[in-house]
Amino acid sequence: DSGVTQTPKHLITATGQRVTLRCSPRSGDLSVYWYQQSLDQGLQFLIQYYNGEERAKGNILERFSAQQFPDLHSELNLSSLELGDSALYFCASSVGQGNPGNTIYFGEGSWLTVV
Amino acid sequence: DAKTTQPPSMDCAEGRAANLPCNHSTISGNEYVYWYRQIHSQGPQYIIHGLKNNETNEMASLIITEDRKSSTLILPHATLRDTAVYYCIVAGGTSYGKLTFGQGTILTVHP
Figure 1: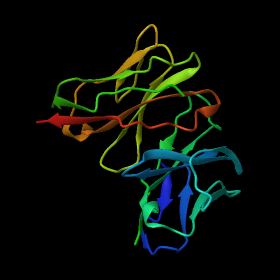
Figure 2 (figure 1 turned 135 degrees about the horizontal axis):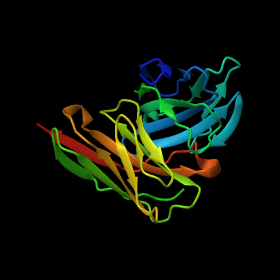
Figure 3 (figure 1 turned 180 degrees about the vertical axis):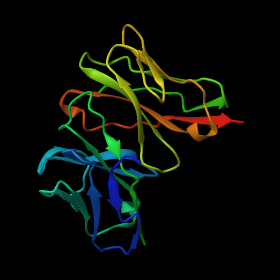
């Protein structure tokens, strides 16, 4: 158990809908990261928040947005869902804001299926 | 970030050491080598990381060559539960948080 908690574990929704994925980082970790893993793209970095502020951005679609709240939990919002958004979404956390040598710990992921 | 090259698959007998190689010839001075593994769509699990020196923890050992252009992850006594995809990642500087996962090595441990 990495200490990173993600909900829901599984989610099925229809195209065009909007969903919210939730992440609680490890106790004491200030950074939260979101990654997407699909069959054709592999594991890809989406976005990072550090202590409530956006720190780095990756291949995140404009239909997707994230935020980190004062209690440090984070939410990834996915809207206007398409079939291709079906994937495993991982949240990860680390103590620092992305310092080399810090360890990033991953949660167990949220399976999203868009039908 | 520097690109890494790993063999697509490897086999290992249970109880033997598994040695997983990784090439990272374009690694720069401030970049670390990280190893993660993923067991059947579970979350990637951190194994070990290092900068220059060899590192060992309760899971594995990491051997980095002197020129830092390659490294080897060693699982000293592989078990069936070590069957997984192993990712070698090079990252550092301001891009550290954006770990770039390649295709990894599928390690299969046989009884």
